Length: 198
Image (cartoon, rainbow, N blue to C red; front, side):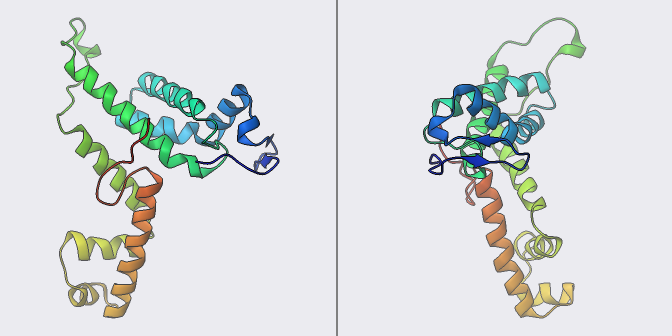
């Protein structure tokens, strides 16, 4: 989350940006949308039950908050992503809770929004976990499934998978580390807590 110290940041498509501290608001926002906009928008839309208009509103609020922290965030790197996803997640939860607290709208039943369960935080955390698991290689996912979710011992898992117990231990270690990194990059700690962002 620190500003770039180099004289310029280059991108794959040839656009060159000055250091973060020197970016004009338009340049900062252009870099924000270019590097993070698509991923953040898709994340928000999934969590808002496919409501792209609300997702775009939330994304705009994330952009504004990021710009307020322009001295600390470099929008041209992945280092900003955990902070951005945490802010986005918090805004989505606030939006869902606000809609849940409002009285039901009357009118065309087809336009009514579906009821949101009280367990929003658990649902979002589960979705983030499933997405993070998709980042792992299939053998890593498979060993985590057997050891952590099915509760099998190392020897049982080795027999089921047809590999030596040492391989199971190694895969479990590297899979756990990769999962922790995938969760961290999405703003979620391994224990299910999200990083604070404001």
